[in-house]
Amino acid sequence: MNKSEYLSNLKEALKDTDESTMEEIVSDYEEHFQVGMEYGKSEEQICEELGSIEDLVEEIKEVYHTSDTEEKKSESDKTSKNNKGKEWYSAIYNLDGEKIGEAINSALDTAGDAISKIDVNEISRTVKNTLDQATTSINNFASNHFKNQWKDTFDSRKKDDGFNENVSRSFDDSVDFTETPVNNVSFETDTDGETITEVSNETEKTDNSSDETEAAENIETTEQTETVNESKDSDSHDAVTGLNLIIDGIHADIEVRKSPNSKINIKYENNGDDRQRQMFEFYSYKEGNTVYAGIRRVGKAVFLFNFKLYSTTIYVEVPDNMNNLSIKTASGNIELSDVLADHILATTASGDIEADNIEAKFLSLKSASGDIDTRNITAEVIDNGSSSGDLDAVNTKAGECKISTTSGDIDVNNTTLNNLDISSVSGDIKISRLSGKGLRASSTSGDISLDVNVRKCYLMSKSGDISANCIGDVILESNSTSGDTKVKLGNNNNGYSLKARTVSGDLYIDYDKSHQRDLKSGTYTHGNQGSELTLSSISGDIHLYD
View (cartoon, one colour):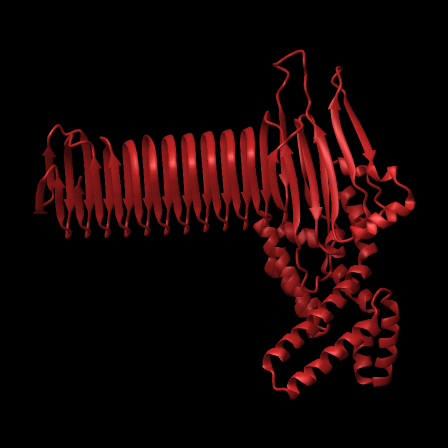
């Protein structure tokens, strides 16, 4: 079953439900499909995760404590409607109706005063506050109503999906998520190669009254901190292979820093409301020399009532001798600072990526719609790309580097490398203070501007302009369809060999005090011919100068 079929069947099953409720449910499920597909899941996988539509309808009936027939009957019988309303109200064990009523009445009274004063701005603010109060009350009700149901579903899903045992299993599942104590867990390897797990519960050091006070004070933020100690073998350098770390953040922001204690330290912070804490859990565990950490969704929500993901962050500290560091998140941002590893991969669907002071053999940063900013990067191979975001790179040293974007701009400054390949479909490309062996820059409709000292250079833009300031002798090839081409050749008057071709554009040469105008397509030479230039444009002008 695909997305279209699932939503169509869902609407059919909810046709006898209140129209506003049905629209709310369908909207939330459409959002679930969107997030899932951004995360790389197929429509069929998402349908399977959402479960049976029949079960969904039954859950909705249980929420309202009524059947479709009873609802229709209650609409035609006012007395019956009032009685059922009272019964339904009594079932909502955590919804304070009096306070909500007072809040709404107060808001309406204020709105009435505002109307009498003909203050449109005040009316707008009052209506907004009223809606916010009502939405908050409904959210609280839905959270408490499904609390136990989600907890049961979470337990069954762990068994069905075969989730691996992780260090957070030391937490008591029966404890409310907002009151989960902070635990420190460390993995160490003894001389026989066996893994020793130590768990220390910080809250055991205080009495029960202190625990309750601390839990009450920290009800808005849940933190689970876990430390995974690096495995070492002091007898053999060959045995030290380093650690691998794989993090899956889903919607969380991820911040990675250098570890102060040669361990992998992971801290999870969830600043969401109770419902979000019930819907997501943090996990971390170690298999061999690989540490897995992240968050995962638990249970199912029938409908979310404008559910909003609040700030969730995973803080990570890593030692210098990491093997592989893999980080992915669907909608969160990623920050890396002072990290040294063999391989670093960071991907996000809609978030931004920032990297500063990174050393790696291989570095890959990818974002679908976010920006990528890098500073002080040293790597053998770099592969960075974004579909619609901008890419900025400052102070980069690399052997091979590839930077690409579809509609974003690319800005590279102060870079030393062997070969650089930069491409953008509709964005502009700007390169400053670049030195190396080879450069290839291409854009379909964007402009290309560069200030480089390279031996070989290839530039291409169909409809954009090309402006190149080349320091030293260079082998340069430039192609443009309708854009102009300007090349400044600063090779200390060592001369050139120019092959120029233009159909409807003009060709100019201003070099070594020689000025030539209205030239035709052909080959032109000067001096020692230190640089080899091949410049072509269909309808644009070509200008060579020093």
